[in-house]
Length: 286
Ligand code: BGC
Image (cartoon, protein in one colour):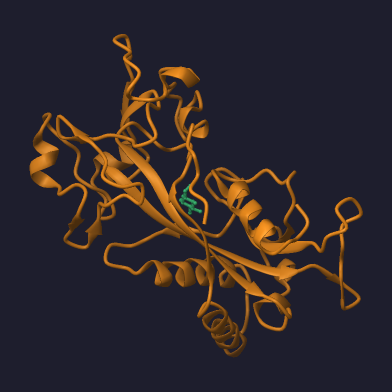
């Protein structure tokens, strides 16, 4: 498993998602916190929805240092896992500090948790076939893999059907839940069929390969809150299990589909990187 070397880029995108807030621009050579930058003046932004304190989010802070008393960073805090896959992160004046450097924005932006926000990404794959035979790519001569992709509601980008780990939830459970929710809900199946598909998913998800575990270069990241994920590959080698699902047939056609894995595919956050790892591991076309 490879750890993403992070010179984050999406986490420094000029306009913060779902807002008109512009980040303080951080050039590549100033990303590292170790590089002194006295004029660094990040914008302070926490989305209005978070200030209403929804149950999935941490409380806002009132004064510096208060956070530290309220939340237990770098450890399991009740049901909320505030440990980072990147190791121990710094907490400066009560605020956790992004382990991959400056982002030009402080506060939480759209993220619920101060510090790491944990997600899980199930990469379900099958071999692309035509007339029962594996399709090989003209250029590489290698067989083409396909994965289950969803079109995200928030920004309409294609992505792996991942989601956030609920407090107290095991990552393996999140992987299965998110995949089930995202794909099954888009297929309007009669209850009996739905049950069968659920069983197929359960058995495929019993064994997966770890693809990535760590920080994600996500556009929502801030100096004090960031995304981390575990991406796992669940591969249907014969195409007899989840691989036989005809995903295009749903009512909401286009929202979930089998997508060819190839370099040109532009996907959400670090998802292209995860798929590259899968293609390499399976010696498939990229
Ligand atoms: C998404 C995951 C993604 C993570 C980090 C989550 O909101 O559901 O698919 O990997 O954010 O970008």
